[in-house]
Image (tube, rainbow, N blue to C red; front, side):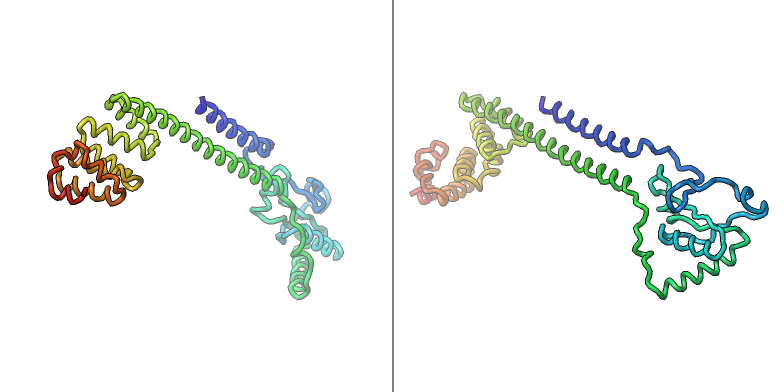
Length: 304
């Protein structure tokens, strides 16, 4: 049930991200137009009347200067008109594309009639030369904002971060639930051990460990169950995993070696266990696992 709830949350957040992106991009055509709409510097559409309607049929408009921003456009347009040159400001800003054309081509372009090209270029050159010598405010002019794409990217990024965060929490929750099921299995193994059902106990402990419930007591109890079944090597392996946390694992490992009739390792492990807790001396002297060593001088020396 927890898994279904978590998956539902993840899918819901993914749907939110999709809806947010559609909200900010649904009004955009699939591909940009071949030619962006002409607008004047005030943002109103420029007349699309052809040059032939207002000028000599043989005259056409020529782009002569790439504009950096609206302030530069206003200044140069006024400069040319003061000198009797008709001009047109062609902005690449298009509301449907949130300034996409400006990012590729610049703010816009200044156009004049072909017959005025030379004079206009001279005026612009003079203007640029003067601009380099005298500080102006154009560099500080505010560019045309493109807030919607920025806002949409911020929202999309925030939604993605939230989605990743929730996904991480979902993974943690799943892992916790998985591990909790392991704890329950380990408890079942413990109850089986109490009833001397060691095969079942080992099976439950194995399943608990596979579900990342790897507490030291699980390894210890599995080691005990294996030892009772005669699997001394398996018992030693499990005791070794927890030997750093309690001296009892060290003592039980000594018992396993004693049951294997490995005197050297049995006495070595017993010595280590006693060095950590001297009470093991008394236990070893009465433990039937060491019965065959009770008369051994080395055993007596260690346990005296």
